[in-house]
Image (tube, rainbow, N blue to C red; front, side, top):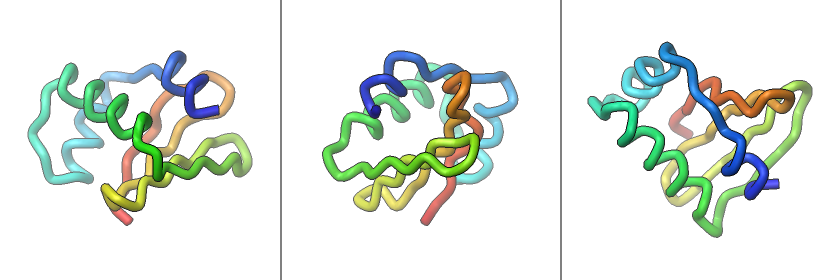
Length: 80
């Protein structure tokens, strides 16, 4: 499932600002995309399908990605 998310993940303009705000960073779009791909490649990530979203939790980075299950659009990134 992680591979499918990695291949199909997409972004909106608003999600880049949301990620920077929630993580307290100032990354540009390409840096965020690279960060997300690197995160998804980590071996400790756990994926859950709850309702209409996938929740990808990466304990080593203390973050959780929320991805829409139908269109693979990244919704947000939260600190855990």
